[in-house]
Image (tube, rainbow, N blue to C red):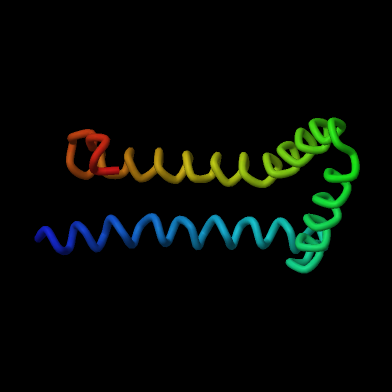
Length: 103
């Protein structure tokens, strides 16, 4: 492939992965009955309660990180699985494992 095609592919693949991750997160949130406006309202309520609590905010932050992890960890797991499958398929086709700059 020409240099410009490689550059295009390097930009396209992460973009597609981001779209897939967004679709997965959206599906999960929709299944839970959460809408985008609900997240905004929750975020504003959380911010207000954190500013009212003072030092007790640390517990709220930990809860928020846990809530975010419920979405991010499955997406990261799917990302890892997809990359592993793609690497194995490429190795089977070429007989050579791809280097870190090729993934």
